[in-house]
Length: 205
Ligand SMILES: C[S@@+](CC[C@H](N)C(=O)[O-])C[C@H]1O[C@@H](n2cnc3c(N)ncnc32)[C@H](O)[C@@H]1O
Image 1 (cartoon, rainbow, N blue to C red):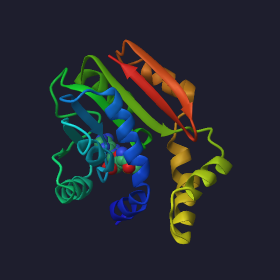
Image 2: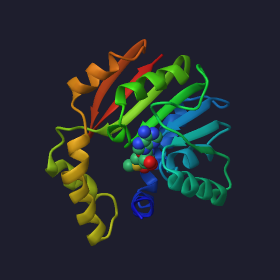
Image 3: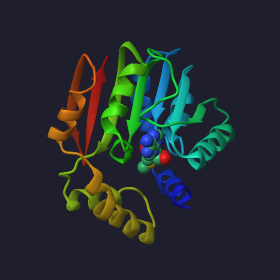
C-alpha cells in the first residue's frame, strides 16, 4: 500500500525525473552501464532509458517496487533490468558500472557505510556516483515550499509534509555524518553540494 501511494505521489513529479535524466544523459555517454540503487517505482531509470542506448539496472530491496517498476518500464516500451537486492550487499561483480544514482533512498539504508562501500566496489575505476538525499538541517519552511511545488492534491500534500516531519527528517544525515561515512569508503574523490532541501553528493572511484 505504501509502495502504491509513493508510486502515485512521485508520479506527479515526472518532470523532475525527466530533468534529472536529461542532466545525467548529458554527462554519461551512450553505451554506458548505469545503476540506480533503490529505484522504487523506477521513474528515473525509465526516463533515462528513453534518452539513449544505456544498459540500465535498478536494484531495490522491495519485491513490490521491483514488480511496479518492471511493469512501468514495459508499459513505457523501454528495457531496464529491475531486480531485487540489498544496497549493502549488491548482487553485482566488482567494477561493473560507469555511473550510479541513489535518489531519496540513502537515509533508509540499515547499513549506510556498507552501502557506500558497495557503491564504490561495483563502480568501474573512474566511474561516478551521485547520491541525492534530504539534509537533516533542511527547515520545515523549505520542505513545505518544496512539497507545495510537487503538484499533489490537498490530502497528499498534508500526508507528504507529515512524512517529512515525522520520519524523513529523523533519518536524514548532516554534512559531518556524510563526511564520516564517505571517509570509510574507498572513493578517489567526493564532493558534498547543498541543493535545495537536500545534498547532492558526487563520488568518483
Ligand atoms: C523513497 S523510495 C525512493 C525511490 C526512488 N529512488 C525515487 O527517487 O523515487 C526509497 C526506496 O529505497 C528502497 N530501499 C530501502 N532500503 C533499501 C536497501 N537496503 N537496499 C535497496 N533498496 C532499499 C525502498 O524499497 C524504496 O524503493
